[in-house]
Length: 321
Image (cartoon, rainbow, N blue to C red; front, side, top):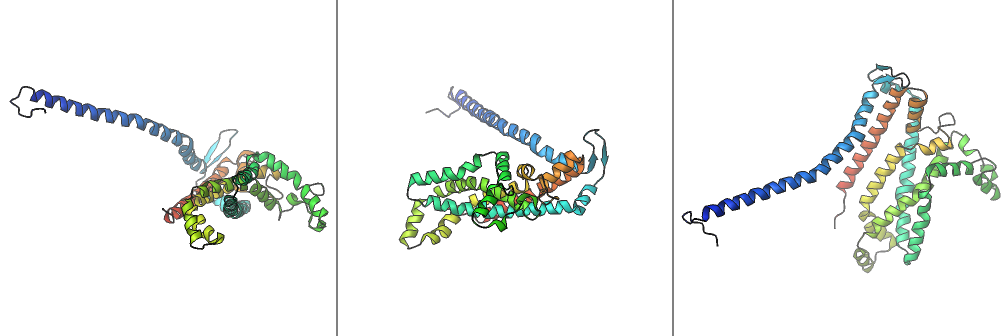
């Protein structure tokens, strides 16, 4: 035992040593914490430099008219946003993006969830793995390749779709799918659902696998059937994945670009334009860089608002075990 009486000769030295040890330990903890924070600071700097600074700069550019070839800049205030409100193509593009998002939620979220539930309900592990692989293959194909594939599939008379309709005696339904204003956007959306369906199914399969099996065993003992188990256990326990997929799907729908450019480039008569393709045409083809930045600001606002609302809704209805 260390003597505490100050009359002992070693007491002062022992107290001083303890104090030094504590100070050294505290200093070591501060150094370790500072060293660990350096990665956080580095990440914040990188994210800020490559994400947040460009976002802020985009809003600044949207207040200008800028010639990307000569570098001439003139301040126009909110005129680009007023032009957005008066541009019928923007409203058509916004409608197409919204339609794209709505159909994607139906197929790539709820449809994929039902398919994943059916796959995970199979008794054979080999059958489950095979189904996951089969449905995931389209997602591994490049969007450009898939767009070209469906472009030729939709070709009138020689395309596989019209050939199939003719073979089934439904030749009256054959039409130039991508050349008509009322069918072009639906043809592109169908291609997108075909490609992204398997990826969403795989993610839902992973979420369903994490649900404790005891919940299903207890439900079976209580006499709950497959439909009751689906909506009372599987869907509520997969709610966080569902919320994430809704956010990803809506964000992707408002950022869609490659599919449109490969298959129709926004035609015919701007009927398949989306905000991304109209932004590209205005900024980089028509040299309306400020107007293109204003369109980009709209895309950012819609996706951020949708994501924030979905995160809030999901957190309010989170299921905890």
